[in-house]
Length: 512
Image (cartoon, rainbow, N blue to C red; front, side, top):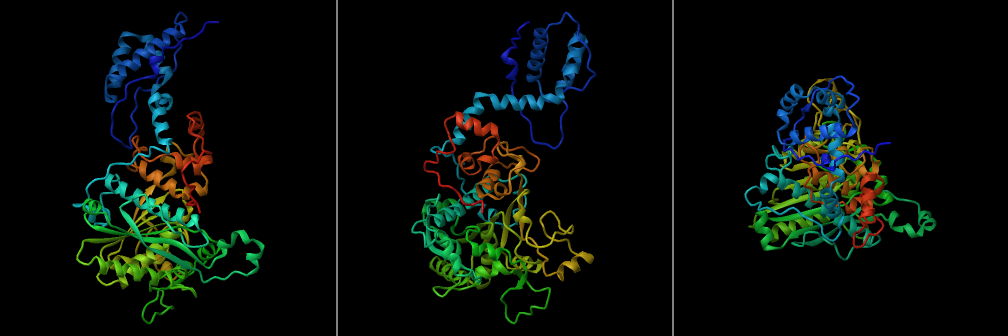
């Protein structure tokens, strides 16, 4: 039997630069399969294919059909072979295989898996455009394609939330003594606590004493931080106040999540029977406004601290950024509304949320708009949390806001579960990542690290995952190994980057 020895150069065609497009280019038209002469050997076929690939790599994709037509005039048998191979169909698969096997990509994968060499995109001076990045024009023209500076800002806000998760799990029963911020130019000025109005039977603590923190009525949910580095203040163009809020962690917080009825917001002489009043989800509002016997409510504590900081830095250019994930994203909207309402001389307020549920009705969304609060929601298409609570309606537009007019609008306004999303939306998709399985489970679709991975790789809705993404894959492998494609989990092990060797990487609880 003859042994085939294909030329290895066949798998190294030169890359052709092109811009992203929804249109698919046809490299070589499909032709009926024709039988090549018997005297042709497999080696000769491979040689012909090699010559074709070399020719095609030296020309643009738009001229490949012309090259093929010239070859047809000089070599009929080669034309028949190419028609049978149908390179227009197999080229994407061949190119993907070449990319996966290339030493360059293996080296890049090793770099992305390294926990000690975390790459970060260079920071730009934002003095001239910080207001635009903060939502001055509702991020028009910045989301699709995604602005480079906005991408870095979103990842930075997500890391503030990750710091809140890690701090909480370092001491879930008490108050974290230290919040490890990725951005060393910020200092924490206030710890924030949320109290549930739900009570659990005392016997639960006796049954599971090790999980006592899960049944606590009041828990640490986040912090307020302010930038105190003069160099960073000059780079950003203002002094920034950040409020970061974690997602659901305790049993009582879960119980509040499942109280989806809408309640009127605290306003002078509220009329709860009026369906057109601003209303929000009962459980979210409870966690924000309920006080404990040992301290004030989250609302009072937050307003007091923000008022103090605004007065302390009076005369400076200030901004307030509220960021949160899951439950934290919901409370972030309530906090932003409250700050705009009750803090005297409040600076611009913007919300940057990840995987947030619906929070209130359309009147609540209109109320935020009227106060000048800007909201940017990062949404994963496969994340079910972003689709609840409330009843699904075909009357929603691309931003999750109901279209005005018609019978449907009247029904929604009088429906006690008629929720509406708020603000602008950046929609990412798990299927765009070359590393994650397209059928990833619910926990992965809602995981904060997965969100930051998708944001870091997002170019535009009609473009593939960007090849020069900076964010390390190590956390994804540590936290979502079962949802990472086998190709990369296997290579990570072969590259001696075992996912069980956590080292100094903290396990993220952000999938809750």
